Each structure stands twice: as C-alpha cells, then as structure tokens.
Image: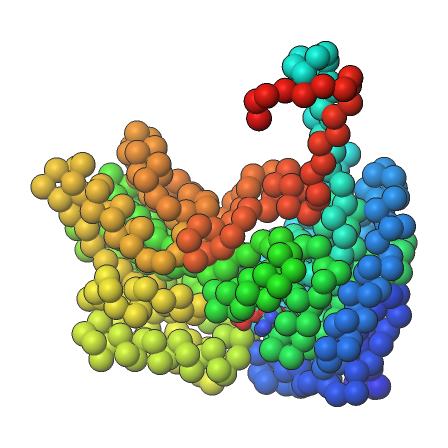
Length: 497
Ligand code: NAD
C-alpha cells in the first residue's frame, strides 16, 4: 500500500473518492479488511458530509451536458464501459472476492460478465426506447399527445456489500443511459470495485462529474446524500432498517426513490415435485454463504415427501466444500464480517434454545465461516422463521391437508406469512398447480422449478417490506426519467379526464 493506492491481489486500487473527474482524499480514512482472512486491504477515504455535498454538486454541474448528449453517443460510451469491464474481468473478480468473500469462480464466470452486460443491455434499451404518441379527437379538433422520457437529474445510488459491483451497475447503467448523472455510495465493507468502475468509466470517455463515487460510512454521509435538494432520484439496495431511514430522509424533498430491501423467501416443495431438483435448488440457497437477498431460506415441504426430501438435501449439502473462496473447488466462502457472523450465531442459538433441531450445521466453522445449516422444529411465528438471517441457514417446515387443495392453501398461507415479499420458488410437477399457487404468492419474482435466472427486461423488486418500486428494462427508464406528455393542437378543452 502506498499513499492512496492500495494493491489487492496485484491490482492497484485508488481508495479516494472520485468527484468531478478527480481523485479527492478525505481528512480521515477507514480500514478495509478482507473477510477471507482478516488481512488489511487498504485505508479508504472516510467521506464527510462536505464530500457528499461536493459529489452531488459535481453531478449537478455535469447534468445539463450529459442530458443533452445524443442517445447514440450515450449508448456508445456505455458500450465502451462494458468493453472496459470485459478487459478487466479477471482483476475485478479477484478484487471483489478479496473484498467481499464471494466465490472467485462466480465472479469470474458469472458476475463480472453480467456487469458488462448491464451496460450493454441498457445501451441497447436506450436506443430502442420509443416515443409514445396518441391522438385525441376531443376539445375541438385533433390533439397530438407526445410522451417523452426526459432525464431527471442527479441520482444517488446506494449499494450493499453482498454483490457490490453487480448491484451498483444494475443502477448506474440505466441511470446514465437515461441521461442522468450519478453519485454512487458503495458499502463500507466492500468499497473497492466501485473505485475501479470509476477508472473504467473515465477511460471509456464518460465526461467528468457524470459518475461520482463517494466512499464512507452510510451512517455518516447517508442522510446528507438522501436529503440533498438537488438529488432527483434515490435508488437504494440494503436492509429494511436503512431503507426506512432513506425513505424518511428523501421525504424532505419528496425525492422519488426505489428501495430494494431484504427478503425471507419461501421454497415450496410439493409431493409431486422432482425431489432431486428440489434438493438441488435448496442447496443453491447456501450460495454466497447465504448472503443473498433473494435466497429462498424457508423451505416448505409437503409432509408426505418431507423425509425423503430432507435425506436428499442433507446428502447434497454434505458434499459442499467450505473454505477459501479463491479456490476453484470451494462452494461456500466466509461471512462478510465478524459482526454478521455473531448475528447469525445468535439467531441460530436462540432458535435451538426454543426447540429447533439442527439437522446439519448449527455452529460456526472456523473463525470466519458459518457451517451450512438446516433447522427443523421451528414455529411459524418464531424469530428464525420471520427475520432475514443473511447467512447459510435454512429452516424446514412441513405442510399438509386432507385434500390437495387444502395442502396448497396451507403452503400459500405459510409462504405469505412474513412481512417480506421479495421472491418465491416452487417445485412441482403440475403446471396447473404452479399457476394457481403463483397467482396467490406475494412476491416480486416467482421461480417455478428453477432459481435465480432472470431476463433484464423483466421488472425486479419486492412487495411489502422487501421494497418499493421495480427496476429492470423499461421500468428502470420509468424510474430514472421524468415522463412528459406534450399536447399540440387547436385551442379547446374537453370535459372528461
Ligand atoms: P445496509 O442497509 O446496512 O447498508 C446498505 C447501504 O446503505 C450501505 O452502502 C450503507 O453504507 C448505506 N447506509 C447505511 N446507513 C445509511 C443511511 N442512514 N443513509 C443512507 N445510506 C446508508 O445493508 P447491508 O447490510 O449492506 O446489506 C444487506 C441487506 O441488503 C440485506 O437486508 C439484503 O437483503 C439487502 N439486499 C437487498 C437486495 C434486493 O435487491 N432486494 C439485494 C442485495 C441485498
């Protein structure tokens, strides 16, 4: 490490802010540490409210120029950013893994290519975004109604640590495509790849001030960012608790916001399911050590097949290898932070004291890891079933009924009985049942006999405490743009709507 540059796995990362096209230091720094082994990774600029205000001011200054940039030119620069990501996939993957502990092979083969795709996808989508035109024959002649998507202004984008660059670019790409400027605030537990993104964007020709990155603790600069009167959109991904605070802060200026929050999603396994597939999907929920908002952590299995399903699940889980996420053979890496590990441990211990049984796991695994865990004997109203854990911990409950219809109704009742509504996965061999059950589930995304795969054109988001709003495809442009209707025609008025 030298000055403001730290070297992580051979990659140089500038740990200062990126504001108005310049690297800016703060008076203070905070220590970034790898979750893999606790190794120090560097001292990162500890943003102050003044830094946050300066970043918004830079975004405000750059806005008119970027908003006026023709769509084709914006799309060209977004594609150049995608090319820049492609060239640095290996570096981005290794830095992200070192910083947040998720599997290197996933970052290398899945996540970073998807980061590049986020930019290409929204570049393409921008160019295909039409103008809606309607003609009204009322009010004394023909009136042309023209709908346009106008850039909204500076956007504050706040992201969590569990999928740092993937989630950041899911917001940055559509915000920039729409003609907005951006202040990105990455999570303090995984700040590094946001800094590399700033380098890549600058190298791709993005003008100064269009993308700004401000580092630091959310508790110290979050309110300044979200209450700034010059901010026109806030997109936040993180916990329900912080989301509530962001919403309250944004209310000061009625700043439109999108909240992507926590989850406690169910995995419903019906007696007619392919049990091997169901067990495979259940084991997938241990991915990223369970630190996935969408994870279907509440398994609801029909009583008749519960024993056999549990046997297959435990067999498959026993084959998972936990260890260093940089090793090709590792399936489950560390937990992000000792504080998070202590929280997981506390939740599981309290469940065990209340009568739950650990079929597998139920304890820490070495200093920084939590063993993949499956708990049975859990009550629907218990903390372990109702609260998001964000660790490799699944609960298993059974459902039954005198008839198939009653069993279905019971499964749906249990599935919907939390304050969340982010996603649901169901495994059944009966397409009619899949349709009936899906229609009744409260969830932003429902997977039938599969998990996680999603077309970026489809809307993404959660219901209830899992979030507010939807992003993805056209929905992203609806959020990041000011929709305007322009009416042209002879003077006149109509007496309806
Ligand atoms: P968090 O809420 O603690 O932090 C998220 C971000 O908010 C961080 O960048 C943090 O610095 C910032 N922040 C903290 N206080 C703030 C404030 N007062 N104002 C503005 N920003 C502030 O969440 P986390 O622990 O980093 O992430 C885990 C959570 O994120 C889980 O609940 C998970 O379900 C959720 N998540 C949701 C999705 C989704 O798409 N729905 C995706 C990933 C993670």
